[in-house]
Amino acid sequence: MIAPLGLSVVLVIGLALVRLCWRWRTGLSVLVVVFVGLPMLWDATADLVEALSGVTLAPMIAPLPVAVVLAGVLAWPRPRRWVWARLGCARTRRRVRAVLWQTHVPDSRDRLPVVRRVRPTPVGERLQLTVRPGQSAELVAAHIPALRAGARARDVTVSRDPRRADRVYVDVIRRDLLDSQAPLRSPLLARAAHLAPIPRPESGLGTAVAGVSEPEGSDR
Image (tube, rainbow, N blue to C red; front, side, top):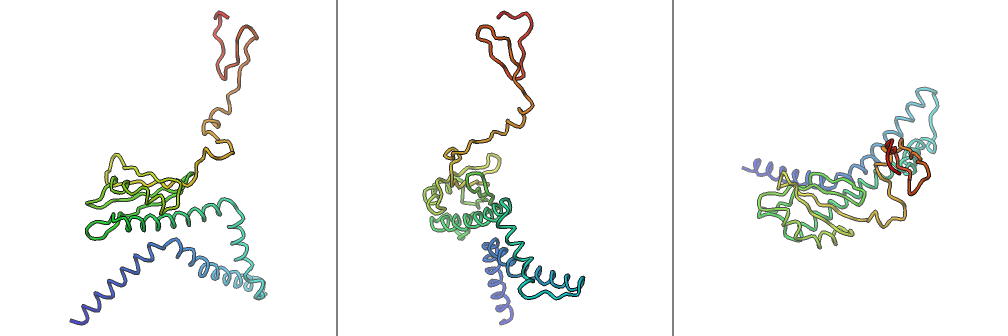
């Protein structure tokens, strides 16, 4: 009787730990890379240098590859933006979950909508939720003011997948691209790069039209 009870307690604690680790998976991944992956790279580099040259790296030289990797991640814009975006998505996911819990969105069994995916967007982050029975996109949208404040964002929009009512998208808007002083680049510029204006004879109000020539015999 005691053994099954102890096994049940262990299972409950184990499931709670798994849920906690999954909720903080991004931060834990960063910690694993920094405190496990980089030291392993350090040791592997030292062993490789010693095997090839017979020289043992000094304690001050051995961390050099680790420092180079960290400096490259922080200095190269693309990986730096990717790391900050991943950390921002994890922070937004935790804040949105906290707001949903505090606003009584969970169902009768205290289950929150499942956050299936979080990805960065040009204006912030987008969360894909799967609502449970008894929940709906309208229920989530009713708490937009709380979501906006909890996510510390400019605005929050909630939309429903037109094909599946249980799939909800929460867009966290943190910046307005139109407020930027930099000009917006249109994706059509690349397709129109090969076009050149064809000059027309200077007569009347004639103008140059890109890629279009005046038909022969037309009245000027």
